[in-house]
Image (cartoon, rainbow, N blue to C red):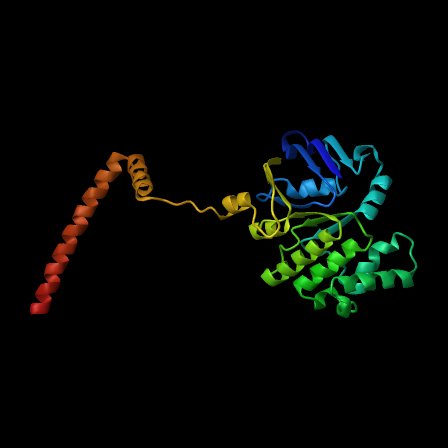
Length: 291
């Protein structure tokens, strides 16, 4: 379904050029549930934008369902994006002055569908995600999890085959995150291809494959079992450096070596004078007590 070959993306010009993606090659089959992981600034969102046709690569080849994307003009790319790709964002991106029902129905407006049919289709989609009772609410009246469920309903309204979720649980608590990921899991079971960006290793339990990025490149790609945290995610994200007594002594030795000898001697003299004052003060204090 998705075939990236040596794709690079550069931003800026001259000395201000930034390499966001560095010759990334990636193939994703239809029906996969892929998690994209990596530190902030490693190129995850740029990769998602290119796959979702929100951006174009500077170099390389991108094939989506057998079509060469770089050969499409803007209108052709926009039509494929509208009909084939559903987007879910971290910040929900619901229009604040429109009801949940109108927000979900909005993408159907660009298909020329009548208002009555548009609203009915949106209501049915909200029922699928358990949000039909909230369809007359404004986004400000929803919890974070409910708002993201509404955003998922909007992403599914055109029946896209590809769902791209960029940090869909980033603004949610654990309960909201679980609700959203279970919903995405149901979407995947219906035959959709799902790509989602996350920093949370626990969410790899829902994925069938995990891709790891660093500095604009893919450094690891592994298949995973549903219900299990990816081994690499567990190792990379949960590993805590363990220091031993030898490590501590080595650090102290390095610090003492870095200190000038003169400074150390001066410190020693000052320390000696301080100890002398302390002893004298103690004797005086004891004498006062006896008196």
